[in-house]
Amino acid sequence: MPPQTMKGIAEVAGKIPVISDEIYQGLIYKGKDHSILEYTGNAFVLNGFSKLYAMTGWRLGYLIAPAEYIRPLQKLQQNFFICANSFVQHAGIAALQGPQEHVKEMVATYDSRRRYILKRLSKLGFGIKSEPEGAYYVLANAKKFGSDSLLLSRRILEEAGVAVTPGIDFGDGAEGYIRFSYASSLENIREGLDRIGEYLNN
Image (cartoon, rainbow, N blue to C red; front, side, top):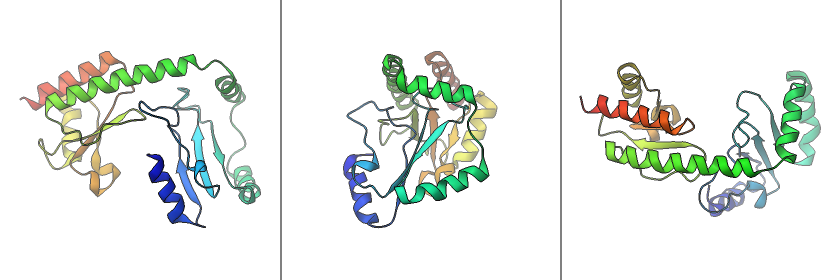
């Protein structure tokens, strides 16, 4: 999210706390990433290790909150879960304190996949209104192939053997769009797009 947008949200919110999901922090391809905490202290920031440190499924995350909410949050935490597994806690410490070169390498790898998938999707006829500058997803306009994104996604899955996410899952404004992930290998992405291309051309 651009810093001016974050600043605007903080200004509009005023005394209302802002909840900011920053799980993709660090996975950006242009410029510098920002936190809502740069613009307001009245915010709950959700973050974790699954994306930047490739610890998906290990369920280790954290919350940054205003001081007055810490004790109520502790009470909730104590009643909903005990703690993360010990090996996962050690992994989190290693992720934060260890060398970060692998993170830069991973971001560069995602960026090369991002550039590849954007080029291929455009050639296949999908519309890219806004190129992703972070995370590892592309939301592409698929209205040329059908206005019902759920139906189109099912057909791609059943006939091409490729899983994509229908835009309707993200609200009415994304209907007619399909979300593609480039978190997989370049070889898998290439094969998936080849299969989708064959399906669309039949």
